Length: 171
Image (cartoon, rainbow, N blue to C red):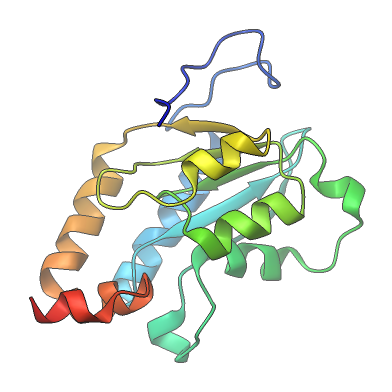
């Protein structure tokens, strides 16, 4: 297993991502919205290579009784149908390491970089993204981690259902 690769100026984007990036701020605000709605507090924001926000969204599985509306999927959906060229060089900001489904969507649309708030509460497809040539950056954001831990503590059944491990909620 490889470690998170620190950003260097030789990577695909000119500036290292931070928690102050507009895309990350939008993703975090989406996560807070989800939390306030009683849903899983994960947010995402897709930003094109020029810095324009293409779409943003948050996990809506609880709110809409959806099987698939994770934050990144909601974000892609809210971006609408775009030409494949719109995704080239794009960054997916997400408050948590993307699950296998969301990782697959990022791979399918050839997103260049995934910037996550944290992966202490859940490690998803980080390694697979790297294997597919997608830059992965972990901001290790304490606010994202706190929001997730608070939700998991108060709603373990919703969290474990969300990640496909409902039996763990019983433990």
